[in-house]
Image (spheres, rainbow, N blue to C red):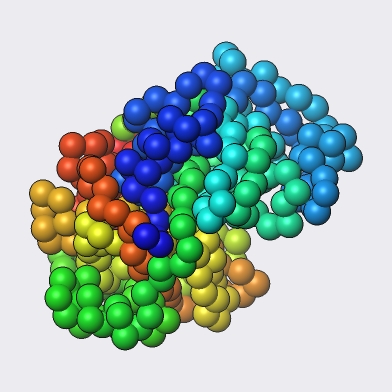
Length: 355
């Protein structure tokens, strides 16, 4: 059946050798509809981002842009504003009919840590064509904070698909009628619309802005950092927020979203440009997101970067759309049910490293 491969399908690919790794893949990497990818033991500091291009291997192109090599085995700092390439522990040999797409994990995006998949013969980031066989690499560019990384850290994830199973707007409306996807009216137009919440139900805290000169964040330290050392709180009482050029913001959607068990969803890395800002949502939405034990839906956390000129963002302004697609089969384990899901039932929330 066409659709996104569930956890059981990913395990089948691992057993058959279509997905392999050194050291071996651990159970914690397998999510309901994706596979977490792990950093290897070396990083290459680059002069510039690059793609291998048709007929080329990544490692053969590396000499053109490499500045120096770093050993990650004891931990190493990836500095803000620099570009790095890290070979991943996993490699793939995609069977006929399967393609793959990668995206940053939620905490990665909330740290403004640009992480993209690079592969041999590649002409675009984050995409593996049918039949791809070879190694995988992560390009990492910390944009707001310098970060400490080690081998085995999981910054991005791979979703595997058989054919195309994206829901049309008509199918999405039918699904929403059976199983409500949002708390309130659904804006369906080339996917499910997201708008920004600048009038919270209580208080006047609407978001956070990254501070430009902060310390290093060790990605393994959960709940270890005082948010005030890295973020400025944003308060408003009039439903408006002026975005500063070059600044990075964490905001939240007005809608609570649910992903039924037989479906997955995705936001494109840069979903839309409206005025002088872009909204980026890192990561995939797994089956069971916003349902689980809460049953109330979960807000979409919005990662916003302003460009060129200051821009006035208004409460309820549509800033993105979520694309739903069918699963090839129902996962054995849903998001938030028996697995560690940091953002189930979330509202406005920073990455898990902050308290």
